[in-house]
Every structure is written in structure tokens, then in C-alpha cells.
Length: 155
Image (cartoon, rainbow, N blue to C red; front, side):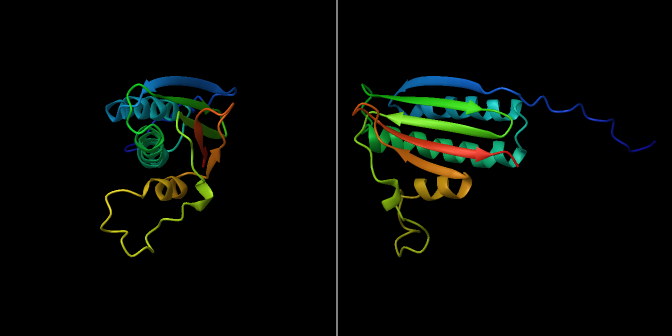
């Protein structure tokens, strides 16, 4: 048949969870390599192009930037840990800094605030919430660090 496409092989969706972990210094120049690695995991797991090109890179970039700049104060002697766990149903990314943490529920910044367009910062949590299915803040384990957990369900 003219113009018909050959059948595409089925996506090799993992049946078991695949986990990768990284530990980086608090340096914003290291964000891109981690984001690219998480996006690659999503592509390999068959997540949609929209998830791989928009949702995951933006949300993970924002979580890492918050951990580095706000959590660790851009102190390169402090580290950020990232854990990505992906399976056939969802992506779970945990970003852990060495800071004191914050109350995620109290962050209500959004486009309804008067200074929203003029600000250079303050959009990260809003973007994560819009692009992920769940954004959770976990208390520090043993009094050290703060964890933001991003969950994205496969659609």
C-alpha cells in the first residue's frame, strides 16, 4: 500500500521498577545533565513526547534549582541527591538537599499575584504542580535535608 507506514514495534515498557541515583554539588551548571538522564529514562520507558519534552524537564529543573539555590544556598560544599524510580505506571523523582526545608503547602504563588509577571523567581513550585500529578514535601530524614517528591503517571 502506498503511503502506509510499517507497523511500529511495541514500546519496551519495564515490568519492574528501574532506579537511578545521582549525587551532585550545589552547582546550577550540573542541572542539565541530571535532567537529560531522567528524560532518557522516561523515553526508554515509553512516556509520551509531551512528558519527555515538557513536563519532566521543566519540573525536574525547577526542583533541582530550588534545592541548589534555596535549600543549599548555592553552597558548592553541600550536595543534592536525586533518585529517579520509573516503572510501567509512573515516574517518581526525589530531590533531596541539605537545607532546613519549607512548608510546601504554604507556597501559593501563582499568576493571580500582582507581581507575578515582574518577578524573576517564585514560579518553580507552581510549575511543578501544574506539570506533575503530585508534588510532595517530605520532612528531613534524621534531621538532615529536605526532600521534594515529584510523581508523574503515564498517560
